Amino acid sequence: MDFVAQLKSSVNIVNVVEEYVRLRKSGAHRYMGLCPFHSEKTPSFTVHEMHQFYKCFSCGAGGDVLKFVMEMQGISFYEALKLLAERYGIPMPKRSQYADEEARVRGALLQMHELAQDNFRANLDSAAGVAARGYLSRRGLSPETIEQFGLGYSDRSGRALIRLFEFSAAQMEQSGLAARRQDGSLYDRFRNRLMFPIHNESGKIIGFGGRALADDDQPKYLNSPETPIYKKTYVLYNLHRAKEGVRNQDRVILVEGYMDAIGVTTSGFPGVVASCGTSLTAPQVQALKRHSQKIVVNFDPDAPGANAAERSINLLLHEGMHVRIMELDGGLDPDEYCRQRGAAAYQKRLDAAKGYFYWLADRARKKYDVHTTEGVVAVLQFLLPALQRISDRLERMAVANDVAAYVGVDRGLVLDRFRKAVAQRQETRFEQAPFTLRPDERLLLNAVLAGPELRGEVIGPLKGLAAVGRLASRRIFQAVFALDEAGGQFSFDEVNARLEEADQNLLAEAVLSNNAVASREEVLAALESMRRSEEQDRRGQLKVRIKQLERAGNWAEALQVTEELQVLERVARASAADAGPRRIVQ
Ligand SMILES: [Zn+2]
Image 1 (tube, rainbow, N blue to C red):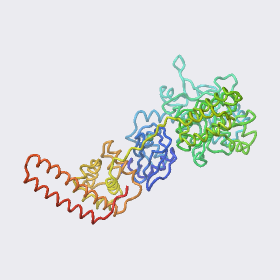
Image 2 (tube, rainbow, N blue to C red; image 1 turned 180 degrees about the vertical axis):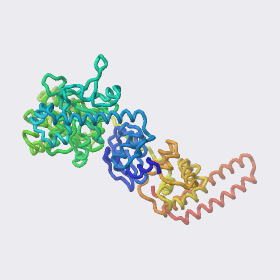
Image 3 (cartoon, rainbow, N blue to C red; image 1 turned 180 degrees about the horizontal axis):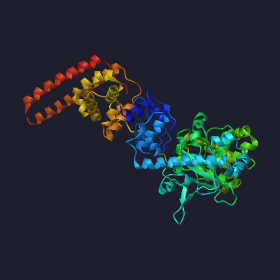
Image 4 (tube, helix red, strand yellow; image 1 turned 90 degrees about the horizontal axis):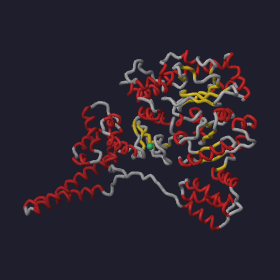
């Protein structure tokens, strides 16, 4: 077995996918979740455990475990192999044939980030790190917390990393850890800053955030630039640590800053992520949604924080998240609140977090005078877009009534107009494509793939049926027959590898639309149904032939063929009566 096959046989795609997507079991070997490759509100992303592949029926993404990791992380085949091998402790052959140039660059960048992290950690414990340590202790961070979050310090020299790195100048610049002066020389991007490592979802350091320690150092927060390993719009701070908590609690808490994420987490609230100073993006929300669809937004209590929360609501609703807004009193940010008021107080605020529409209604009431009709209209107009994003009509109406009561609207006409506007909504629905395969065809394909016993019983009779050559899945059956004749390994992967993409999609459909392992009796019934359709085809051909002969005036031969047809029809009636009402279940 080559290394790829060995690796694939020792990891389970369900476990790998579950690191990124919350899956629910939905059949004998089938799991479903929200597709990580396109935006959706109802799951159409499916993983098949027995045959070890995934398929999205909406966007068409699909493949094996390696393809999944490649697409998910935007990495090469070689890197995906390496990542899975490391993750599951499978020794990888030293000199690998799979490495390519891009993979080498990203490998070098990851290595530089690890070296930089070691350097920053050591600096923090050294004499040079005294100011940074002082800042951390003022912010109440224990040594354990500093260790847990890997905080460090970049020294003042501006030369520490470029001296340390044994990489080409081009690669150092590409890492974002070094920058280039006008004269072409390199210097460390981060100097005299408290360093927060930023990880990707699988826990590798891909960038840093650096907080200024001197008051006159601008900007206060400096982040790594975009690099081949750091795509800002896709990354949320702390997600790799938080995702387990997010799933367990079925809720994510979104804060603004690194210190907020650290402070709230260490107060005993798992499942906290930060947007890292950028405004929230759709890919970030999609990354969260794969773990939970419920979010509590806990931004700073100041005006910019409230505005950022308001902006994020529409995006979150658009992605189908259930949004609550958490407000802290006393003008404290989440980190300060946890330290000054304690975890129990924070928990209370968390429990009291309002549904986003009540929060928006509060904002609107502060903006407009609800004692005037104009004010009421303005408030309702303000709320309308968010309400219209609720996809369920009944829920939308219920919320609209609640909100109207909350705002204090009792003017019949205004309320009526509001209700009408809420009720109207452009519905865009995803229609599940009808199955292209016949039930007996699906069942037989699954039987062939299920194991050698059924396969042995089914392949012989199938090969003798011309009807198989007219099925939508005929090329799949041809691949099956060819593999069977070759007598080697027989697996889903082997069959799949012999198919063009359109047929791979059909095969995925056949396997995923199958809910349970078919019994031998059902398989034989499907074979019988194939046979009957073969005879039906034959009778259809005879009828066409008879018409042609009659048109040509060849009455003698037409009569002969008619007799042949009658014999076949008698046989069909007899066998149908014999078989009774036995039918194949869809
Ligand atoms: Zn998809």
